[in-house]
Image (cartoon, rainbow, N blue to C red; front, side):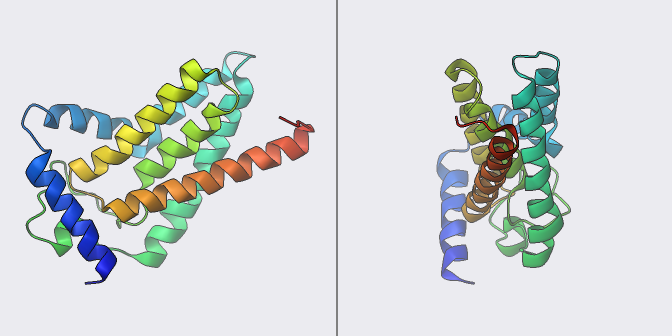
Length: 179
């Protein structure tokens, strides 16, 4: 195992042995469910399309998630082909059904931050901050339930940061927006 994977496994085992509690588990399973297939973020972005004031944020959020999904799920997961943590370390016990795809990068994290980072810019802070908090919780939940390494989470965040920045830069260029 590589030194990064050793650190990742140590962190996951620490989370499993020190943070996992029976009373927390249903909460973290619910939070991780919000990231399944990006459904929550897609629904939020589609809802924003219905209001003129938030339409741009909804469109940009959908484009950012789309770009992030292409990079994460179509390219990187298959290119890197990293096994899930429980496939490498028998001591890591997943709390949800085992995902069928590869581990790196985290698609839940990518979708969550791809949308939340976009929403941060045009929406008032009362919506942007909760979006970022929820994205962070979804990212952590993937480690809590034992299906992603911390470096998978970081990889998903980096892809989301890139995709949201790229989408926003294209929007600014096309619209002539200087904000």
